Image (tube, rainbow, N blue to C red; front, side, top):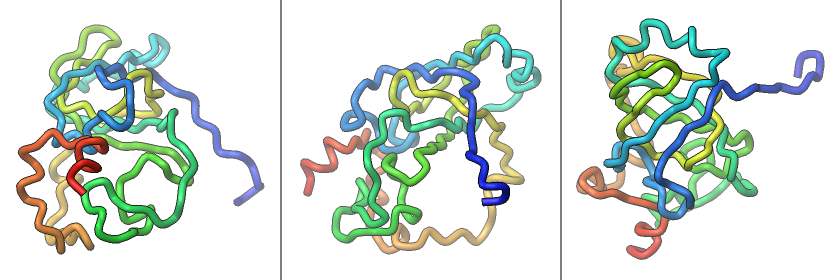
Amino acid sequence: MPGDRPICYKPIGIIHSEYTEQKSTPIQGVYSKSMGTVEVFPEYAAGLKDLEGFSHIFLIYHFHRAGEYSLLTHPFIDHTAERGIFAIRHYNRPNPIGISVVRLASIKENILEIDGIDVLDGTPLLDIKPYICMFDRPENVRCGWFDERDIASVKAENYTPDELAKRR
């Protein structure tokens, strides 16, 4: 690392949801039918200016309840093979940073109401970025091992780690 200095982030808010256990939280927002709120701390509220015009946003957050990580692990959605941690979306990572795309329903002062939440209640928020189709939806996308699996029907379900473990 240049200068060998630690990398430190200060949360800008807290994500609130109905989910209190990792095992019962949807594995991705696309599988969630739940609403939640994002409380942006008052000192950062001015940064929300002009965000209301976006239908979707990225939430970047700290997996505050992540456990020990392994560089090889089974994805929740496909337990047939171990995959590299950087080829899956699991919360136990070397740097426990999460990202979710959610629908922005409304903003009232420093509170964002969101739809499609897949985050534990009380999760520290690190950043918010607007979803912009031109930048965030590239063409000719390949999805590695995920493309090889027949999981098209999964989108209709509200999959959680607990439910997926029962299907093995």
